[in-house]
Length: 298
Ligand code: CP
Ligand code: NVA
Figure 1 (cartoon, helix red, strand yellow):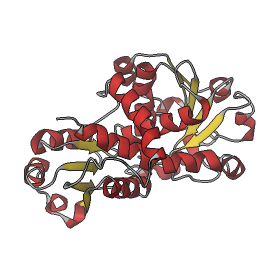
Figure 2 (cartoon, protein in one colour):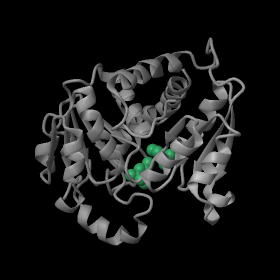
Figure 3 (cartoon, helix red, strand yellow):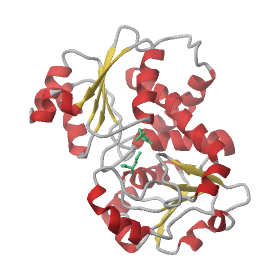
């Protein structure tokens, strides 16, 4: 039984296979020679908002021959306190796979364990593996192998998206620099678990110098809304803008997982200047999602 619960637990061979097949699914959209989810129904169980992840999985599952049930946590008994173990054992007898967006990583892991159906982490507080696989696919589509390249993450270095980048760095052989104020730097135990060539600093100019990719994410992740005012104050300045882009390689890519908050983590002009890349990245969620689903059922 395969699951995609984190980049930390995904082996390099599987990651490379998913990345390679993403390009195949992209080319073959509308004419897939084989529909690997034919006869299957997948459940999407979401406790947080989503545009890209929800739509790319719903469309992707349908385009691979499957049916989809979208279950907002509050519409099912899970939202009224039914344990995840029971929800998992019920759904595991009715559907063929599950895609879960929630807070605690432990919830996705418990669901995978108790349901005994392929389970995907569609974002937890700990990781966002589907996003990072798409990001790497997008980088490689435009610039070739990511191995040996320099990726600079700017902003809240302690949230789910940089954590998945951290676990990807060693597995896929690129240098990762995280530029964040001290209070927003990744936990030392995550860096220790990940290994790899990773530099964490509060000097964002130094981190951007010579980078092949500048990447950012929101300053206020879902679930952190109560800290908004403090975060906007603390993270001010940790922004991708023209001055920062000029320090990177001349052909550096600028990417954002979206949603983007203009003039916070990225300024409006830089966002528009790199909109082609950013929306290619958003589109690629669909192709990579299909590749993940195909890998899970192969
Ligand atoms: N990037 C991303 O996961 O977007 P959504 O929150 O809209 O799914
Ligand atoms: N770090 C962000 C990612 C959104 C796709 C969040 O968790 O809200």
